[in-house]
Image (cartoon, one colour):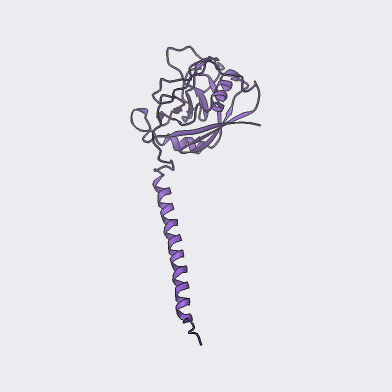
Length: 224
């Protein structure tokens, strides 16, 4: 008769193999959790590298949205996602320019370069310095009775520029009332995800600069 293998050794070998697989899965799971945690900074924002300045220039915006059209801009950032309801009724020119740049991918991988807690978070500069733009500007005076209150999104401009002029830089008001004069072209208002705006605001550091890079990963235009 041929010698039969000892079944006890077979059982032990199978058990050892199963145990090794289980332990390996646990270690991989823990490793993944640690890397995820390592990718996070306090406040729930992903730790990302500062992007290189972007060299993009347009001569003028194409017609992208119509006055009164219901359009949302979904802003995906390294701190989460929030949505802006574009005010195409009161600001058709500015809304159109913003939507055009978003659909061209202009805002992808730009940053919120200026964060002033209790006031605004500001981004959309391809240079990341506060002095860049898309290569053109548009003019659209805001309503005389506009109030820059919490959640309002408007366009930034220099003091030397006339009321209502804008390029690509925008800001979200985080103050109950920023107390600004009616000189900044409006874009719309945050309609969803305001806690993400607050999370970005918490990254404010010295000299109005963020403590860590806050990246605009993309802005997607959605029509209702």
